[in-house]
Image (tube, rainbow, N blue to C red; front, top):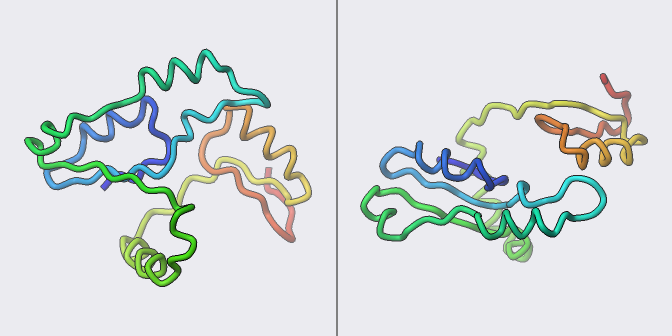
Amino acid sequence: LVMDSLQGPFFQPAFDRLSRGGIHVVFGAASMTPPGQSPNWLRLGWQWFFRPSVDPLDIIAQNRGVMGFNLIWMWDREEEMSEMLDDVMALEWRPPHVGKTFAFERGQEAMRYLQSGKSTGKVVLLVGGKSDV
């Protein structure tokens, strides 16, 4: 199982490593989100033109799948979402890597850091406490 919120150059290597019966779940495209305050339209056009594609006949032959969803369309389906969350939580995920934390009051600084493209791991806002970085 691959849970992909990035796509871009990460999609194909992750898809290629799926074992038979594996599913690549796409729920975002963070690699298409431009760093900084304004988009670079040429870069976005290049990324759009060269975005990954998967041949449906290859999926059948390889016995792998790709699934995409947009959580925005699920807001009014609370019971269904609750069941899905229970299923996901049962998978016993490793905690994500936290790259940097900021006190909630430094939210604008945290956003600039995230937009800089220099972040690794999660950028976390701490509510009611001090940052450790």
